[in-house]
Image 1 (cartoon, protein in one colour):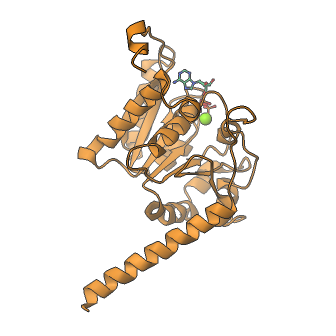
Image 2 (image 1 turned 120 degrees about the vertical axis):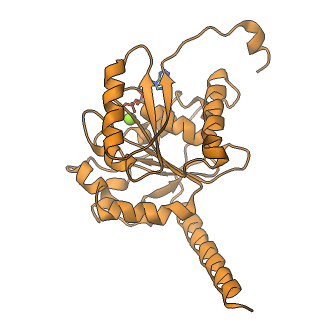
Image 3 (image 1 turned 60 degrees about the vertical axis):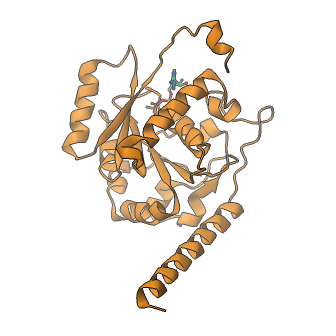
Amino acid sequence: MGKISEALQKAAKERIDRLDKVIKIQEQKRVVARKMKESKVDARLIPYFDNKSIVSEQYKSLVTNLLSLNKGKPPHVMTITSSIASEGKSVTALNLAITLSHAIHKPRVLLIDADMRKGKIVKYLGVEEHKGLSEHLNGQAQLDEIIFQIDIEHLSFISCGQVASNPADILASARMSDLLRELRPQFEYILIDTPPVIPVTDAVVIGAQTDGVILVIKAGETQRGIVGRAGELLNQAHAKIIGHVLTGIEYFVPDYIYRYL
Ligand SMILES: Nc1ncnc2c1ncn2[C@@H]1O[C@H](COP(=O)(O)OP(=O)(O)OP(=O)(O)O)[C@@H](O)[C@H]1O
Ligand SMILES: [Mg+2]
């Protein structure tokens, strides 16, 4: 056997061993988000409860747009942020992660809550508080202690952990880049939820380390100039905006469209 094919086989075996290890870790650490009635999963995670609703269809078209980016080679690691607080970043990140994990080719998806100031994804999922990103970046937890499998197939999750005193610094640390380097080969898509761009620098720091940024904009509320400023801050750091998501839009859907769902 040639040296090249030996090397390829070795690399493939190493990758399988690595994946096995991660799967074992996830099975041990399984966090159960129980179904509807006794579940604490927030009702805002509509694709979790009703994959066929009109709202879920909107997230599906968002995923379709995302997957068609760059001639069907979409970014691998994406940051979700917004200009200011409460524009719908976390709900968008979660619904996007759920919808992406339902995609036809069943990609393995990881959602990271990198809002170490007031991350709420644990709350939206209705799961227990546990060690997360801040403990890992502060050297208090290994990767296998912070990565969880929720009860949505193919979707894993890393929570923000405890509120950190120096989030921007630890997000800029070598430990963060090492973490992303380790996770990249293990998931098809990694979505990172962050704090807003204008008040704090965390999203800019993360955005520059990922392949693209999705900027969430609360329609009818966030002013154009503020969105423009957020874009400038991201551009200055060479973080690439790959798209915008408008939240808070209400529109009339006629009866005949409902009948098709
Ligand atoms: N697409 C949407 N349409 C209408 N409301 C939405 C949408 N997405 C999220 N929201 C609502 O916006 C509010 C804030 O949501 P979320 O926690 O996702 O915001 P955030 O930008 O992550 O906030 P923070 O800056 O505090 O992290 C919630 O009440 C949520 O239900
Ligand atoms: Mg949030």
